[in-house]
Amino acid sequence: MPLTIKDFQKIQQLFGNEFESRMFKIFAYIDKSQFQLKTEFEDKIKHLPTKEEFYNREDQIMGELKSIREELEMLGYRVSQHSDQISALESLHPHGKHLPA
Image 1 (tube, one colour):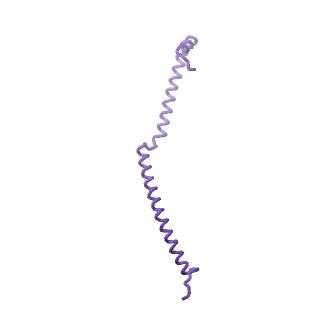
Image 2 (cartoon, rainbow, N blue to C red):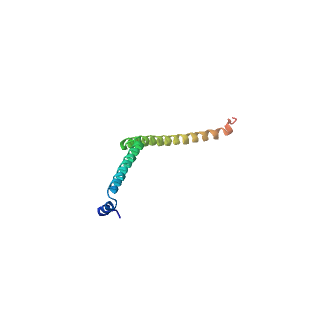
Image 3 (cartoon, one colour):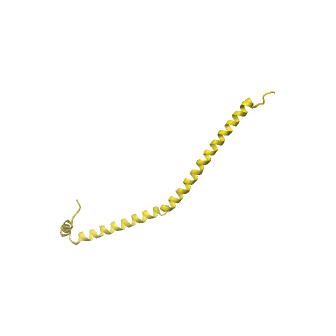
């Protein structure tokens, strides 16, 4: 349960101005720490692309991937065709030699 204003007032009565001085120092330290964390965080993420830059690059990469897949499909067909042609030639020329006529 968080401290209430009455709790702070009672603590201040017990410790006097010393409590207020210490609380001010604590809050100042917290503010300074938050600023430092924010600054460090911004320094670490400043090299990252914006959302728009990221998605533009992602679209470009996906386009390249699509064209690669299409090329592989075409090459697969050509390899299959060449395999058939090689098989036909090997049946005509077993062991890589011409049959005597």
